[in-house]
Length: 233
Image 1 (cartoon, rainbow, N blue to C red):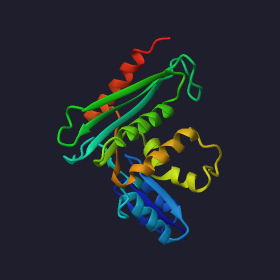
Image 2 (cartoon, rainbow, N blue to C red):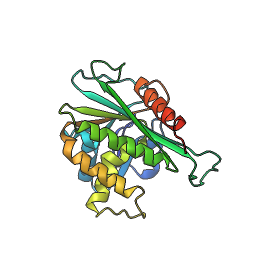
Image 3 (cartoon, helix red, strand yellow):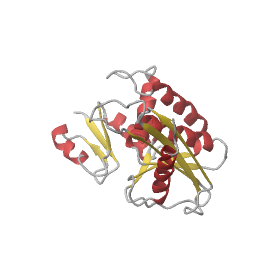
Image 4 (cartoon, rainbow, N blue to C red):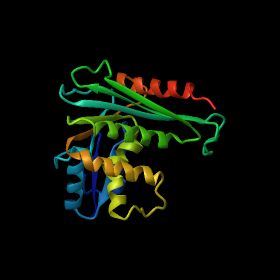
């Protein structure tokens, strides 16, 4: 029987029950990460990577649903965000060339989580939300490379965090291919992979709920909206 691993909610753990029973453990908020494996050993190895038991904090992320976490004074915390204004689009429609999009980052020292030591943003026409989320991550990693201290990247994007801690390693090991088809934003994810390799021994991640109680997340959301407001043809 397959072994299922769940990470990131109150049902975190390994299960050898049928999927019909395990599936209900995954229907929670925040949504957990979960995966099925042929053997318990494979499931345990993945679980250890995701929870940090293996010691590799770059391969997992902590969930801070209420935006609260204990900041380490000697660590930098880089909040990232990306967004787009798909004005006039219908559900499932494509981004229009005139739609505005932007990314933003805000860097804090752990001993002062109220005042960022650095902020940056960029805005574009005709780009997707996910592209901007990845650009926020890339710019955070580029800034991280400039310091020697440990860094935690804080994001509200499950797409970004699931990919940077898990999916991109599978894609890379499979020659940057996946069974279900084309990898969206492939070139950007290849750049992320290379950047992470340089800093992974001092890198960690946190997920927070977007536009809620996290001051850093609210700050980057404002920064990217300001960048879009200032974007002119």
